[in-house]
Amino acid sequence: MYSPKQAAQRLADGGVGKAQLPARKAFVLGILAGACIALGGFAAAAASAGTPVQKLINACLFPAGLIMTVLMGAELFTGNCMMVLPLLQRRISLGAMLRNWVLVYLGNLAGAVAVAAMACFSGLAAAGTVSGDALTATAAAKCTLAFGPAFLRGIGCNVLVCAAVVMAAGADSAGSKAACLFFPVMAFVAAGFEHSVANMFYIPAGLFASGGTQAALTWGRFFLGNLVPVTLGNLVGGGLLGVILWFAHLRSPRGAEK
Image 1 (cartoon, rainbow, N blue to C red):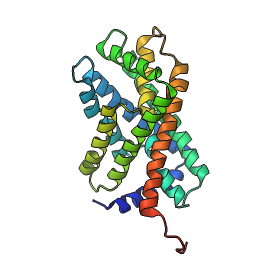
Image 2 (image 1 turned 90 degrees about the vertical axis):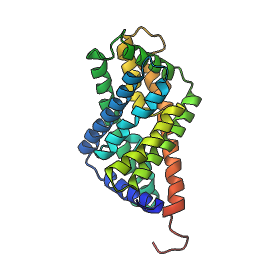
Image 3 (image 1 turned 120 degrees about the vertical axis):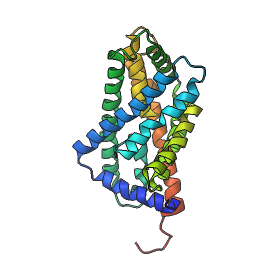
């Protein structure tokens, strides 16, 4: 294992590479990450639907998505919020960071919605199935959240997700990385926080499964009522953790040579 300072530096070094990714590669790796998160979310929903311990099963299975994402080197918007580390070190530009975020975010959306469509139109989560009804209920609940609660839940979520990413950067084996990723993600799911990329799966899946029969479920509510506040909250949570880690571990002493 690496020290917290070394883990933060490794993550900062990785952020420099992310900023330099060609647009096509960043987008494709974003699709992969969106699909991984969605597959983890679907497995969690399918296994837990109709059970008395639904939240616990969800929390235990959902981390598979982030574990796959990290171990396969995919690009996840929420984890990439930690690119503030190399930005604060002045190793990448604001424009390069924002470019990565936009490309990866759009890729995540494409990958997650594709898995949502596959799950529903394959019959596994169609209308009337236990999984389909569970996804519809989950999506409706997310779409009826007010802006403030959705924003605050987004902050809490990405503090934990980015903490998992930092911890994984300090691990030196696949098994230890998986363990580092599992527990913070389990915590955010159990707590009921909101993850923008996960919602790119859950809400479209609910829309597809419901077939437009739920008044609370519309594409407008998905994008404006949930995705906007949750994404902003994720940015604040991840960015805040990045600033704290930079200040604690990576900031050059005042007066030191540049």
